[in-house]
Structure formats: C-alpha cells, structure tokens
Amino acid sequence: MTSTAELLARRNLTIGPYSPLFYDEPLQFTSASGVWFTEASGERYLDGYNNVPHVGHANPRVVHAIAEQAATLNIHTRYLNERVVAYAERLIDTFEPRLDRVLFGNSGSEANELAIRIARQLTGHTGMIVSDYSYHGTTITLAGLTTGLQTAVPLDPNVRTLRIPDLDRDQRPEAAVLADALAELDAAIASLQEAGFGVAACLFDPLFSTEGMPRVPAGLAAGIAERVRAAGGLVIADEVQSGFGRTGSEMWGHRYAGLDPDLVTMGKPMGNGHPISGVVTSEAVLDAFGSTNEFFNTFAGNPVSAAAGEAVLLEMAEHGLQDRALALGRTARARFDEFAAAHDFVRAAKGTGMFLGLDFAVDGEPAPGLAKRVVEEMKARHVLISRIGRDESVLKVRPPLAFGEAELPILLDALESSLDAVRM
Image (cartoon, rainbow, N blue to C red; front, side, top):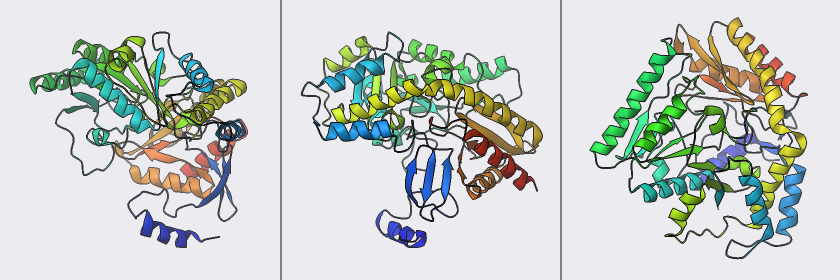
C-alpha cells in the first residue's frame, strides 16, 4: 500500500498542489460502504459530510443497476430506450405538476449552464442575479458568477449579487431585515436594466448552503421570485445540495424555502455519484427552447445513467429515506440547539433535516479557527464533517441519507466531545 505521504507527492506531480484536500493530514480511503469509509490504515470513519453518495457509498442496488445495464446496452438519446423514458417519468413525478419536462446532462455545472442558456434565450436578456457568496459550477459562465470560491476570473459585468440576510446575525426586526434585502435586490435589478443587460434569471440554492445556511426572513424566497419575474427574468433553483429529500419535510429544497422556480437543476446525488444531472422545467419553457435548438449531448440521458438515477429513487422509496431524514434531523437539530445553548462560542444551530451546522462566533465576530478545530477534533474521533460560510465559521454536517439511527449517536457524541475539547 502506498503511504499517504508518497501518494500526496505523486498527486502534486500530476494533478498538482492546487486541488484542495480536507484536513491538516489528508486521509487516503481505500473503500466505503453505506456511511462508513475504510482508510489505508485500516481504520473506519463515519461519513457525516458527503451528499454525493446520496443513498450510501457503494449502494448495492445502484451498483447492480449500473453493472447490469452497462452489460446490456448503453446508447444515447437519438435512439429510443424504455429505461431512459421510465426514469424521466419517475423523476418528474416527484415535482409539482407544472414542472413536467426534463433535460439530462452529465454534471451539475452542465445543468446550471444549460438553465442559464435557456433563460437568456427565452428572455432576450443576459443579466444574472446570484448571492454574494455562492458556487454553482466550473464552466466559463459559472466562473464569471462565482462569489464563494477563490477564482482569478472576475465577476462578469452582467452579474449582480445579493447579500442573503441571516436573522441569527442580524438582530433587527424580521420585517426590516426582509425589506432591506428586497431593496438591495431592487437596486441590483435596476442596475442590470440601466446597463442594458436586463434580467435573464436569478440562480440560488434554496438552502443557501454555501452561504452558511442563514436563517432567512419569511417571504424572502417568494419576494425574490416575484421581483425577478416582474423584471422579465426566470427563477432557477439549484438543488444539487438541497434536493432529493435532504430537508426531510420536502423532496425538493425549493418547496421547503417557498421558492417557485421556472427551472430546477440537479447533479451529484441524482445518480449516487454516477455522472448524471438534469434540468427540470415546464412544457412551455422546453417548447420555447427546444423548438429553436437542436440540443444534444452524447451521454446525457443514456440508459446506464438512467439506471443509476432510477435506483436512487427506488432506494429512497423502499427505505423511506426522506422520512428518516425528517425524524433523525429533528433529533439531531434538538441536540444542536442544546450545543448552541451550552457553549458561548456557538452563536446558533443551523439547518434542517440531514443538513445541519453550528455557527461559531466570539464576541459577535465569526470564529473560523474554532470551527476548523472542531472539524479536526471530529476527524480524530473518526467522524467526518466540514465547514462553510463566507467566514468558514459554520460547521457543515450533511451525511448520505443512508445515515441511520445507529450512526446518529456516534456523530452527536463525537461532536459533544469535540466542542468540549476546544472549550478547554
């Protein structure tokens, strides 16, 4: 077995040293099953972070479906295939009735790129509105509207940003916080119109996860959609992180947030890590776009990808993973609230369902150092989590939905011990 140090050196000489790694001392995993990793040392780690293997690492149903279909037939959408159509029908059935068409892709970046392309064509505008700390993908277009990662690409001139308010940090009356946020949005829309770009679309993750899962004022999502549509734009919901039952109470994050989208984009969890993505929209939007564009992608909508996606939905249904996320999320959130009350350096508990966090602050100021120490303490206890937010001061706990009653106490006990350790 190659040592971690040797493998890191080889990685730097090939992939390069700029692709980020978690933790002060990187982990080298050799296998995974369900919600457990096995490290090169033979030690096991509980996965409290990864949403990509949505129904669990190496899920037998997904693995079997991929292998069986790959051994039978793999073609693209210029040929008819029952499995692709059946999966499209099953996926669309999870959405509200007006969202009844789907375009397939290979990645979340591609899905967001396509949604923006559709919006720009249908509206005749190019202006985009995103949050001022967000990430939606790696294409040239998306790099030009990325605000939540270091990038040498400047913000595109046809992009305006919106600061997403957090009621845990802004103690003013909720109505005042909402009014200020919507006034900022009005100014962004006016700026795009005055510059001649107009408004093509807004693009938001309904849970605002990169932003640190802020507790937003009631009516914010609906207010954003109303103003963007009044300006002639479309509303895009990026469900890569918030979708597929993660909130517990809803299948899709936009329903939880009260956002009424024109286009919904999906990626990584859709195929449990298999490269598949999608844009779900309405018949009217698809007709307006498709009638003037011969949209085609060789491996978008192939039967192997469809087999993976179908297996994810079947696994969720058979094992009640959304309901489990709701029940476990309530238990976990109650403990997170207790942790916030017990530690003066925890400003607030965050999140819902199986997407939770703790916001660290000292004397009212973000405390990213404390958050990093807790992440490392958790790793020392063989439980993996991460951190998010513009200050990287919010813990990110977002395990596969295969996470169950047996694993939750392990995570919660490790977190309690880690919080006690950094307080000492």
